[in-house]
Length: 169
Image (cartoon, rainbow, N blue to C red; front, side):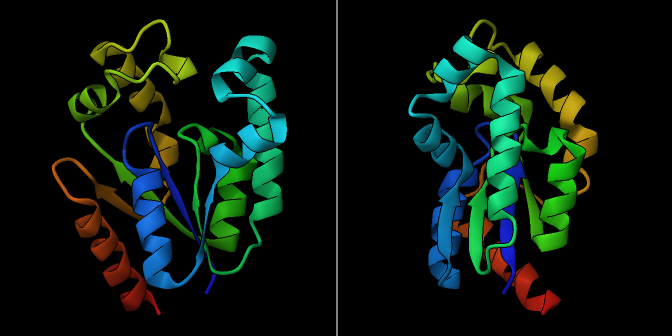
C-alpha cells in the first residue's frame, strides 16, 4: 500500500486521525511537524521566530521529499504544506491525499488555548482563520478525498477514510 497523506488546516485532527488510521492499516505513523522539530532541535514556534516562515517551509519540503516514497505510512502534514506546488505533486504521486476540514468556528474553538501556532500567535481570531482558510482552499481542494471533521469523532473520520480506501482498491 502507498502512503496516506493527511492535509488540512491547524486543528482539523490530522495527528489524532493519523495515529488511529495507521494502527488500523498496520502502517507506521509519521508526524511531519514532529520530524521537523526533531531535526531542527527546536520548536516550530522558535524556527519561525529565529529564521522565518520561508526557512520553515524549506525544511518542511526537504523532509517531505525524503518521506514521500515511504510505503505503508500515514503522514500527518503541517497545515501549510500544500502551499508548495512540489509538495502537492509529491504527495499525489506517492499516495492518497486526504484533506481534513472543519468550520472556521470549530477550528477557532479547538485552537483557542493553543499558543504554539506561529501563524496565529498574534491573531487567532475567527476572521484571521477564515482568511487563511480562504487562501489555502484552492490547494486543499486538490486532495483525493475531503472529510469535514466538525462534530465527528476520530473513529468516525478514520472509518470514512477506510471505506474510501476499500472502494479504491
